[in-house]
Amino acid sequence: MKINHKVLLPFLVLIVLSLFFFAYAKGEVVLLINKHHTLFLDRFFTSLSSIGNTMSIFFFLAIVLRYKLKFLYFFVLAFLIESTIVILCKHLIFDGFPRPYLMFEAKGILSQINFVEGVRVNKRDSFPSGHTAYAFLIATYFSLKIKKTLPAIGLCLIATLIGISRMYLVQHFFMDVFAGAIVGVSSAYVAIVLIKNSRKKKWYNMKIRFTPMRKNWIEFIPTPEN
Image (tube, rainbow, N blue to C red; front, side, top):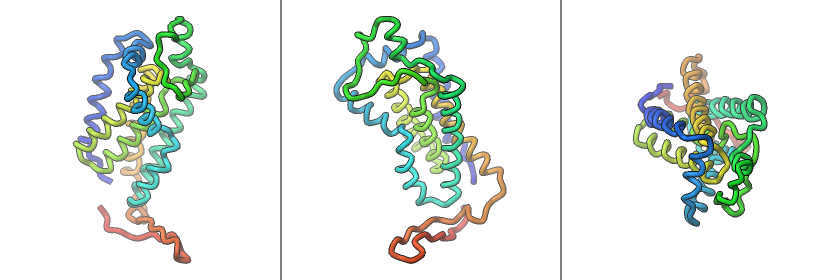
């Protein structure tokens, strides 16, 4: 499995440029984003944020199942790495870390915050942002799969907007989102490197074909190696 490192450049540039926002005090970036509330943005960011929900894995699995088994293996391995890191951080290392709601409540400025109706605002287990980590995992995975820079830029932009949505909805601090992005990108990259350096399996270049009307409703079809 060849790696086109050029597709990672948009993600690297984004991470480097994002370092600028650490100049702001904790919570300030959330306040800056949150004050630009409109009905359109409420709906847009609420819908976009749902893409970063881990339950959407079933949608992406449906897409990945059309690929060769090595790409399914790549996807599952990357997801397991990302999920393990996020779960360990949220529920063990940084267990109970307060989210923006509790910080703004302690400062007595909740009345200044624009909350989106119907969106449940979480109060703890803030670090890192799981939605952002998953979004960047998906974006990096498909970038490495497609191996073209322009789609990688588009995927990076979508993942970035999902990260912004988490702050717009007052679910995470900037550092949560920043860390989530690093976890997502790193998980996908580590997964593909592990596969690249492992011994090739015979089933890598097979595809799954579902034929529900037949007795053997799952078939493994050999394909040319690439």
